[in-house]
Image (cartoon, rainbow, N blue to C red; front, top):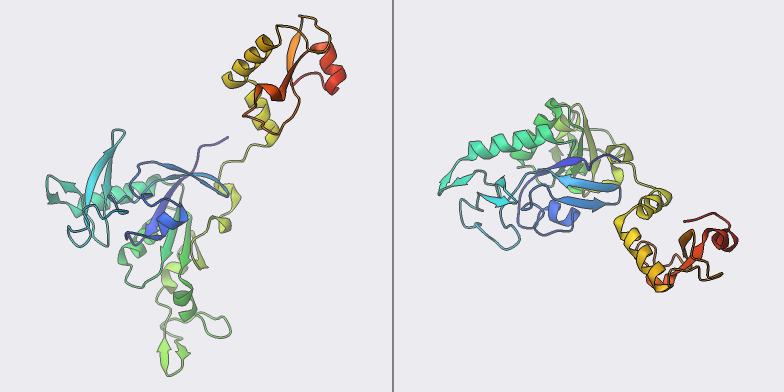
Length: 278
């Protein structure tokens, strides 16, 4: 099993930005190196960071607030509400935050980006940097913006081929970043479902999880308790040799009650379950 991939979440920062909804955590941008479960497997949040975006902390500073915080000895260099910088004794250092974000992009395994407005200059820069670093970037674009770039036949519109929308000609302002190397553009709100499973660690099978469980301290402790409860004897033949603990039911697997188990000698176990032992 590999480690959870590090993911950089490019996009505008706001109090309730797409990151908090996608990860179902109102403070997703505040926790350093936090790990989240997704339908495809675990991922590790690898930036960018903001400070207290769920309750308005520092939002009154520089049109949204900037700053740094410490979590388990790690320093978060963050920005918020369209501003950027690192708060160090009250002095803002935007360059420090920019450098930190560049490092986070360089260190990540892949990037998820979301564009829902055209004045997302920082996001466009992040996507370009990720492409230059050969990072696979899954670019999600608000459907309204996405549709501006298509005509009724599904063709791209660009500066040379504007799309006629009524009396107004529009252009696909995002055509360049959509076509950058390693960028996969998709219309709609970000979702992990479109990201290939190969970007996530292989999921353990139930059999693999069960085998590991039987080697765990938790199972060893439960086994000792059940054998003690049975008086150190097989609960079928009363012999006290080669004792094993068998599941009477798997309804509470990994969180069994003592009543879910039965103590058997290896001979009765074979008769009872016809598999040897658990």
